[in-house]
Image (tube, rainbow, N blue to C red; front, side, top):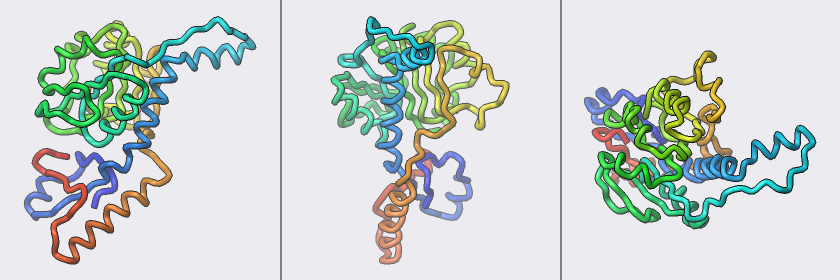
Length: 250
């Protein structure tokens, strides 16, 4: 049993050699991550940072007008459990949801789904792009400068998946060159983020320290999954929850 969702740090070669079955905590973090995602989105669209700065300066500005997220297009890189939960919330706000996955298969809560290799043709439709892909050989440094150049200049980019989806200098370039409007990043290519990272000096990026999945009930939820699987194991039955496909890496 692995008490995290991502399994990219596990010794896959040894696990395969030993014939070990691995289960993870898929789904445990879905609610917490979805809440953080919309905290980021609403923080941006409702200009909350600017509002609080005015408070600090004792400015009462009743003329400020903010954007609604209704009818905005949110594109998810990844359509797993977390993305599905977040897309469900997005639908409540009246947003259009697009999902990208490896097969292009249809997934509940997404208005449209496309193949991963088709992503560059879809970027222009999106107001918000959210990375929720796991780290695999296929997704490592998947997003290049060409990906960010293909996005709209008004795009809000949010990464709460894996930091290795892109190189740090690539996201720095995307922000400095205004290929995207703004970014909220909870994960980074190398963690912890270096004290000298250029990301700390860029105005249009907001950083959190890989905390979006941290929830007060995570351990108890993950333990419930373990107990269910352990009961199956003791009864010599197949493991019933969150069995990891070692070949796929998730």
